[in-house]
Length: 559
Image (cartoon, rainbow, N blue to C red; front, side):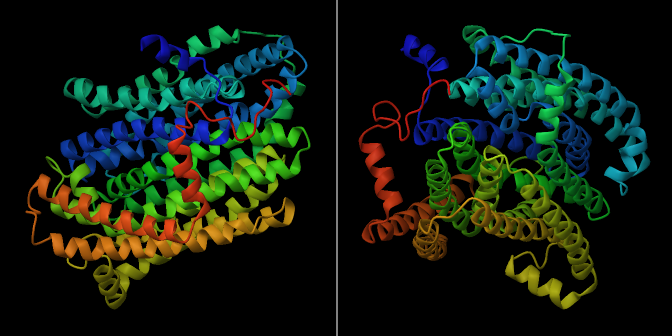
């Protein structure tokens, strides 16, 4: 048993579904830890000032990570460069890897120090609505957190090699250890140092995220070393290629900074509600969208480099069909069962019923864009595998402007127009809850994401091609999802009189049984209409494809 587990660390996963299945399992495990992390945070603080400060402290380090770190060590950018050199010789690949490592580490240390000293000046941009004391607390936490983008950047660089050799099991463990570090910070360091202890736990998690990959790199012979004979022309190529994506990710982080700044003027706890709801919907996004996109990218990069355009397109839309198949029904269930999900996961300690209702409403608004968010991740990776970097950047600029503009507009409407506020509140069942103006933020975010997906799809069709099977699977799954949602909704009403929903067990059983009944009806419909994606999944389960079936598209280890 132990021997088989150890073999997984160094096993190559050759096909899209095998790798995605493994990554989805890992993502599910990481998400469970992430939910436990959020339960601890919610139960300790409630949706209040402390969590507002904690979540705001991520904004500046995340900006540094996405704009600077990912300009140098983006997995989606480095893998094609690495594979190209590996196809020539291991020595060339190792030299390239060492130079990137050396340049990145020194660049991030210098820039991290700059951000460290600029933090007091930037606090008014991140949280202008905070009191001076809260802003000073924010600066302290931000400065500690600045270690995390350096460590996560190193982890990204190590992942480039791990994924290129398709050792997905090692890569899949990293998020588990990241969340474990934060949990240790909440349980053991918070009692000693307060919020500062939790942030130290974040840094510990980032260290573990990188360290778990080191044994795999040693086995592959790619443990990084300092190499000061840096070819700046090579670095320039990487940065030039990754800059549009880094700017796109930077726009996303600036969007979150704007949302955080706007939320800091709203009711206390608005930043916490936004982030808790986003984290809940991110579970599905990670398990489904990220898993398929990460698994697909090395395959797509190899296919495009080898000029196998038809296979490239087939692999892209194979992943897209699976993302739609899983994410659309799941998002409908999140909307219908939102109150039960939030109460079961976060409902403890200081997290009260008002917090539950606001987070549930925000979760419903995020859920309408989960499929879009997942497809965005895939399409952007496919564009990058094909060497098309400008299109996603232009789309991200549009999305950024839309979200920023609509966030401000929607907040003003909900604050000034009592009729719209009342109707909006009644739809989400929070009309008697104070502070619902913050719900304008997840609404704007979701609408902007949906428009982003529409534009990416149009450009993808124009530049690279399309497959009509996407429309077919969307129509099938959308119909099944509506049936699923209807059955779950009416089941909630019936089971409300059977279970005691004032207890943890009662509300859990109400949501669980309603969800199971909805899923059964939805997938029975898909089976009846002979949906290919469902049949493919069932066949894979019967054959225990993780271990025994051949890969979908066998690939050589080197180009």
